[in-house]
Length: 137
Image 1 (cartoon, rainbow, N blue to C red):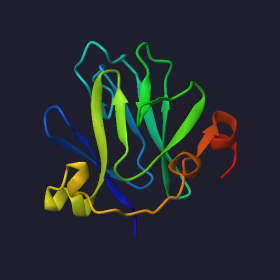
Image 2 (image 1 turned 135 degrees about the horizontal axis):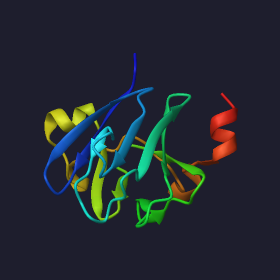
Image 3 (image 1 turned 45 degrees about the vertical axis):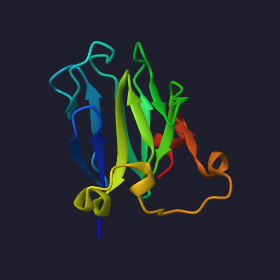
Image 4 (image 1 turned 60 degrees about the vertical axis):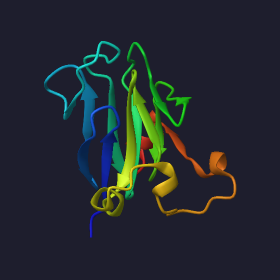
């Protein structure tokens, strides 16, 4: 069974469904999967890709950057995304949710049940450089 996540756009309450393997692009241009109409967002700002059932995001050399949980995504690196992560595309915030949270409308951090236990969350996150991500299956 494919994994399914949602990106909850916090400012307007919209949910974007993402299935495992689906590539998602963000930006102001209309040819993006998720069109973000905000001046802080570049025309082609960021992209989400999958590797081994794990979702990753990278910045496309945008002007105002992409952030995951407050940490800037460096060019040519892919940052792992997990349940409850906050993603900022320019100044527009999204929350990574699972299907259970969306169905139950549990969008607030204090209402979301824990899905993962990590003793050191910083060490639990993985980043891959562009060559490793694209060349190693």
